[in-house]
Image (cartoon, rainbow, N blue to C red; front, side):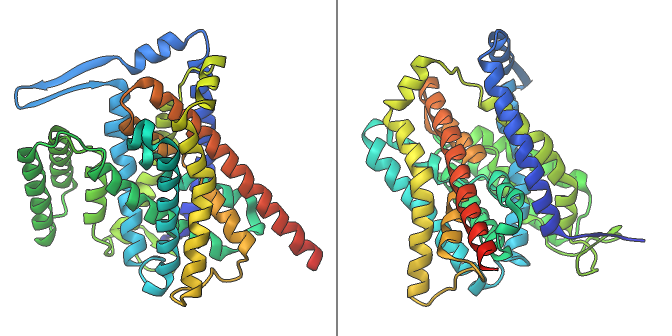
Length: 401
């Protein structure tokens, strides 16, 4: 008997569980960084080693292995999710994609503008930090809240978060890639063309794709473009066609596509191992009266905090209302303005990708730590606001019954 799999339901279930694990890992990272073994924690993360020699040479640290190599797998899964949503999911139909698209654009533009208005004179490169939405925590929060959230709002948030991911990927590629070496970029482009060619001739050997995927990662690494983008590129190049001899079927009873099969295999590793490991390694900042005082008086911290807590829901609400007034899109079915505001607040949970961008945006460790503190606090506040608003909706609904 073939196992039945629903990609969307399976995704939501894993994201809610993964979100809880992510919070535990981040809390553990903070605790260790402020414990008697903090020196050992930071020493391990900064432990360096070299691989290869000559033309093929890598100089890495444990932290870079997590942020550059493990996160490539995370971004590969992100690429798969984007490809699935755009070819057969909620973003495949233009009318359904309009509201998430405009909401995401508003939810990226307003946080960036708020950051620049507060901290632009201090460090303008940080504007990309508050534009991101952590899909695991945001969707996970809605799954935990339960019946207070109408299904259309979950779909809206999922679509919005996927488009947010695309925006974050483009920002990483074009804003936070520095000192780009054109020869290495051309080599990376050549590898992409080779992958497209071998895909067209029907090559099915995973070893071939892994080899050229590794080559793409290395060429991007040497070019100055962030190598995790290789994961996104490979995910987008993956064909959304039925996988031969699949032992699983989707919710419609059809054979799983290659994308659905890869998601089923890799998503648990990404959600339950890679992302928590990233959180543990990157949320380890010293918390002291000095650091708290520094954050309270830092335009960078306030720019990120206000961008996520205020800019995200405000941008989403304004964009959605404007689209509705212009008659180019509809509100999610059965939703209210309060529900949209609550969903916008959930999108203000930046966390994983926001911390990832903060590491690229700021050069000094002090500014990176301020950004991490701001992202954590903003994510907590945004999550609490979303929870409160959905609780209000639930009580109103129970009184009207």
